[in-house]
Length: 165
Image (cartoon, rainbow, N blue to C red; front, top):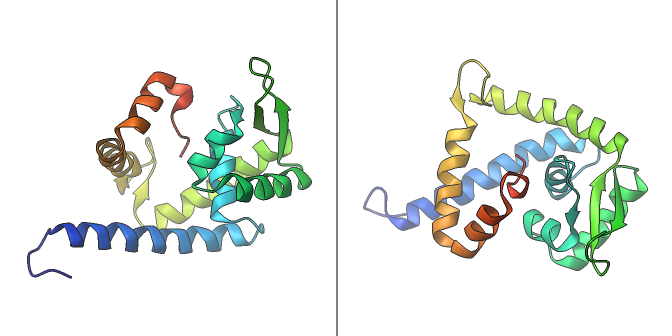
């Protein structure tokens, strides 16, 4: 794209290409279970057991609220997710994984990790390959520089506010 290696256009192109290829690869893994990447993002966020407001789920899944509602409805129909009124703010709805949803997440997480390991991308504690945490950390740092408000929101939320990967 550029005559100068490392130019901003190269960074954007590389990040976009990597995201598309990774989404395609993981989408193929999830397709066996009729799940989309967006559904996987929702399951991963809810896997922390905290329950999350639908607005937060929409932001983390990168979906508009109406689309998220339809997706969560499908996950509810499959008995993977349930919704409850927030006990503190009764105007809000929180989403949680069901017991079946937790089992499905754990099973799919192993399949996703195996697919990443084939690429030489490993999780903390896994032998060999490049640690995914290093890559995620570098990308999170870039995101916090590009979106300081998001960084403050996650810092204020503490460990429970951190996205589950």
